[in-house]
Length: 438
Image 1: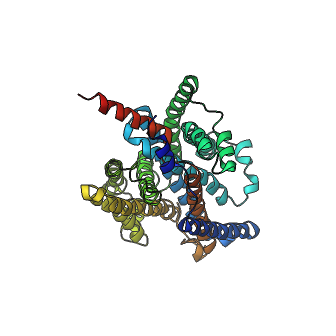
Image 2 (image 1 turned 120 degrees about the vertical axis):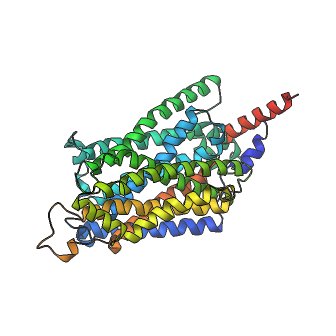
Image 3 (image 1 turned 90 degrees about the vertical axis):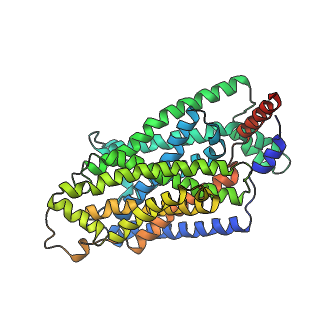
């Protein structure tokens, strides 16, 4: 195996520098503020939020849908790339899997945050109704968390064994824990065959589970028979939107990690170019479903649908609607469709725009529809007729986003962001092929 020492030197986890400590400290402070706000919400009840009879989901559920969408690309896309044995995926898969695991964990936690009585969480399992999409969500999310964890963990085993030896004289504490987590990996033929088989099984399983997760969330909305959600387009709409949100998050994190960890030699312009093209394809697909969701109904809309569409296009939510469409979808296409736009700087900007646009997109999917009830609003307080998140909601939501970033930060701190063993094997194969060339 060539360059193993150099690879370990380049790719082994490093201590936080000043920037890393400040970044982690900021995330911990934001998380602590959200925890305090949530404790107050538990004490006083959800009266501290601006959610009422109509806007009964609000920012928490839109945030949940965002996390679910972001988790999709890290598991399902990586699984497809693993099964098809695409070589260009190697330096990107670990980061994608970390994002996926962090996002789906926070999606599960966000559901609990939305519950006024989290002490009744067990009732979702003991008194579940199989005809309810909420029950399907409760089943599918823990399943997806488990599969995402295994898809991250199993390919890590060879790297953990290498890190055990690497830190043996540098940090005995880390060496001991890497050794335990490596499950006595020696790299024998039997272990490699078992690992390869296990990864393949998980990759096959996670694809339908990921698609089901996105579709179940779409069904949860569309089966409520509300204007704005009553659409057979919702399943494909959510899946295509998940690809966009997930790829945007992946590009953003990859650009940061590449710069901070000085991984330009491993995550090259070629990989960024591939990711950029992939995001353009995802955005174009999602744009098609947005046309189906918003433009086509204009020609056949009922009075209620027309009211809802006018509210989005011209009314109270028009700024957020056009922001999510233009900044989160159309402008990134124009940036990335050109080769110059698929360089690190423009790529980061486009990815960040997609992430911000995707988050607000989920907000306008949830809130405007809830504020258009079946019957006219009469004889209710004015606060029920409008909705904008309270300070408690913003603090708690900010904490969930900070916790997701904190999980990503610490996993990338203690795990190699780029697979060491796989990279070494591919470098050795490349060297051998070059030597055999006439």
